[in-house]
Amino acid sequence: MSMEKRISRKDLWDGAGKAGLVLGLVSSAYVLISMLLSKLNGSTGMALLSTVLAFLLWALKFGGCIYLMKLFMTRFAAAHPGCDNSDTFRFGMVTAFLSALIFSAFDMAYLTWIAPDTMSQAIETATEAYGSMLPAESLEAMQEMNFGQISFFTNLIYCFLFGTVLSAILSRNIPSRNPFADNRPTSTPDEQ
Figure (cartoon, one colour):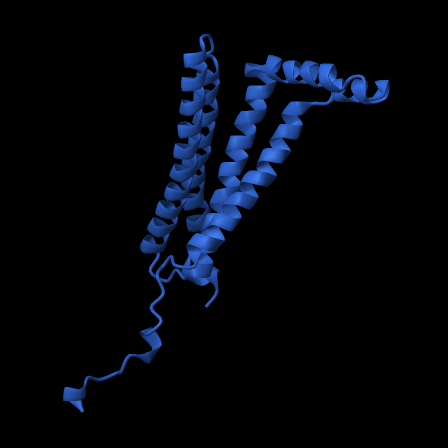
């Protein structure tokens, strides 16, 4: 039976849209909180605390996104009784694409309008470090690059691939497969 007969495309995209929105917002919130933590400079103790908090926040976001993806895939499978592992994988893949799209758009907006000085500082640092090794044309090209667009496509590809691999891993057991389902006797011994 094909997926279209069991699960409509509308149901797939509707569920994946909601899940993708949540995952994209979680990743976007991580960027904002990380930006606020980076402002906690000053004494050595604050820098160390900021580094530890940044790592803990990253681990929380990483584990949280995996947990949320599994939760959304499990709920999708439970809401659609005819769902099999390939349907769950498709749901996860669409969710990964939509969350990657939301996060990439946020990151591009962040780098373009909210914190454009971040990229200009990075370019200045790279120019100072490698300026003597690069020809003048390369330095000019580097300064004319639109890092917001580069960041958008880089994040879109990376997040989509990560989400797709995660979906492939998680969907192997969502819904759980019973290896003995086909080998059950049709009647009990007492009925024979």
